[in-house]
Length: 399
Image (cartoon, rainbow, N blue to C red; front, side):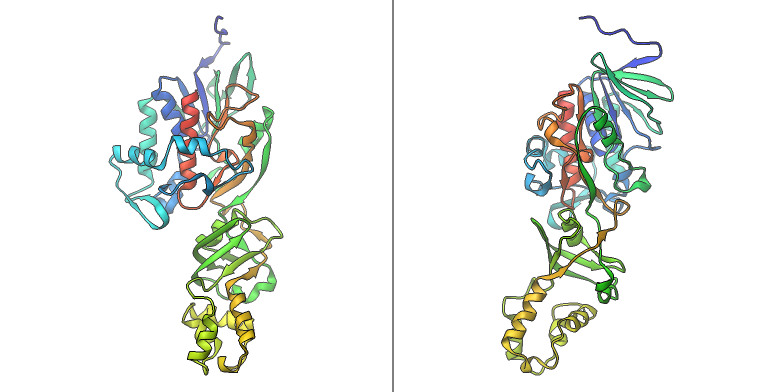
């Protein structure tokens, strides 16, 4: 069959990728290096803007403990195929080929020794190796599909290709230019969208928890629980509520109306308060808590527990109840800090309409969706970048 004749002013590519973030850059570079003619478009003035601010400017670019069970999705097995075919070790090998020094922090998190700009420069260099046509500061007009070709309108003209990749992310961190454009585009082509919500985000507490607002700035190791999420990391009290790694992690599992449970004494053995009663019968609860917690937090918790007098004057039952509450202190957030403070977006393009092997839409041949745009959300600590690399790789192999 003869190829359709381009209309006046149209430029042909093999693939058009919308979004020059982590997933889009990866997909474009790999597809270009496979010999595909690729147009990569972004509305931002430079590529990889969210990469640049990640990890405190050092980019937590992957996690060596990446596994499918560390991702949330309404289609929980979707990420398995892509993650198995492009691993953390694969991306690390790319980083090392570019001579980028790195180090491992806690819990398998890998960071650049230098700057996140090294990761962006690496990806842009890989795109250049694949002769990718990268256009930033581009205002995307109409996107259409007819005769097996996708067309996009930019200021400088119209472009068309048999493949279109949605890699524009989600609405988290709107000050970086993030929008829900990916969802609008998906719906335009008949794809469903799982309700987007902020993830890896601080949680707000209602006025009834005002006592804890006086603890702004206090941080302590905890175990935080919500739904199927259970994380042993630090929690931080803020003037609005709760933050810190443990809270950011469980926020991805939290839905409005649900409780978050906090174990304030994760390193204490069961029955430790009764043991303290026998060892220090004249000590007040606050003094015993100060051995396990920051002073201001110990004072606030002891006030809430309302254990009056020294430990020796308390019944074993009362102390057991106090310990149980310390191990499962319940907070009911009245919201989160929203997309403005969310590191990523949960929800997104419904993966049940996509191929887990190629990221292609089942009912729209040639249409792909990758990265944060889809309903796959990783834990804190490099997991979302690894999903960007893996999903970008999967689509690139199919283009």
